[in-house]
Length: 292
Image 1 (cartoon, rainbow, N blue to C red):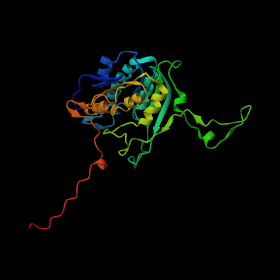
Image 2: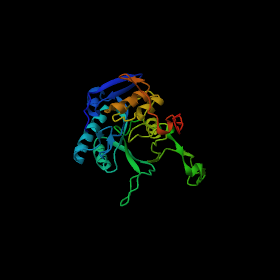
Image 3: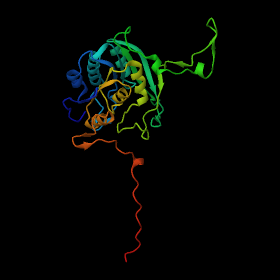
Image 4: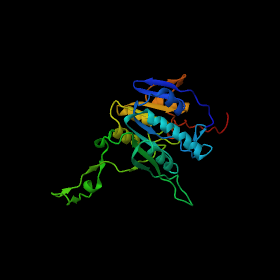
């Protein structure tokens, strides 16, 4: 990461805290132990993305995993005993995440966020069309899971109307069910209303399912790598509190704006950058054939 690391600073309003600074320093210094109900962590993947000049590349895989183990330990320390966490990483790094996390907590589900992508056009191998997510808890006998809040259509009952003849009284299969562990949710595209200037923005639909399932109104939701602050934005819309940590100032300003905490920062008006198709058209210029 080539840019300097700022000392953590907090801007807070109405139950929502935006922390500008390094995730590890912020977790160590500003978030009390056992104070958070839900954590969603979507860190840099060590695959070479450019985050406003901060390159997502560590000297080695081991250096990357050493960094990950530090923030994972801190996240688990900040989580309440009945709290839940969701951790993402690249497909190639998830096995290391899985092995490490299962030594510290209970992994209940291994989720696949599946999406189509015209950008993946590999020629000599199979291009990746998913990102893996671990869902875990500290106490497998005591955690929040609001199944009724995230029900989806069950095709067997709703569409095919099949009958379960194994029951004492044959009954049609349920029309709704808890989602399985493969989530087909579109990626955020440029023309979507929610799009922000960020290379790895996660969709609100993904976070809505997580926040609804694994927290209750008034709970505290933490995202240590907030990016466009979708986690905090969804938490606020669903009546939760939030803590969002972001090292990059430009992305941090997105959080201030999306959460309605500030409409300006250091004298700069905060607004979403207009998309190319939203730019006002210039008035046509009259062609001058000759001067009188």
